[in-house]
Picture 1 (cartoon, rainbow, N blue to C red):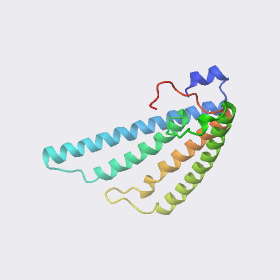
Picture 2: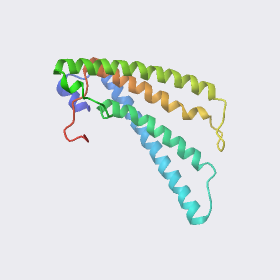
Picture 3: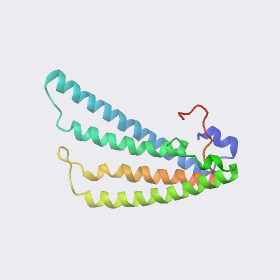
Picture 4: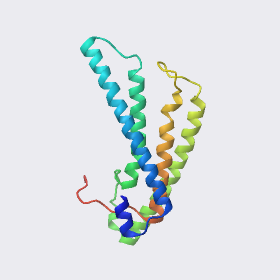
Length: 174
């Protein structure tokens, strides 16, 4: 759901602005992670097959950028309601009950995302002193995006609980 759609339904509130700002920040980080991943992996392939050379840290940095891009993209999908769902039961319910079911599901998922974020924080702290094999960075950097993605997903799910699910988009892949 974008800002224009929200203003047609109700006025923007400060939590909407804050969540929108976080989404923009995460989108920037996501684009940077994808750019690093594509750049490093492409350079590694070109060097390996074109010049019989290799970058020692390319695999590790490429994998790290991949992990960041995946877990930063998840909350952006949650925001739009773009993740796969099974609506066999929900589609048979009246619209009011369908909304109640979606809000209850979002509340349950938000609790799960908070639990995942908490667990990710614990794992990152436990692994923080362990360094990656080729660069002097903590292995915990592989876990940090899990916590960020889970926490931002929880915020989007809480918004769904309060405001309701985003409108279905016509022409989505169904």
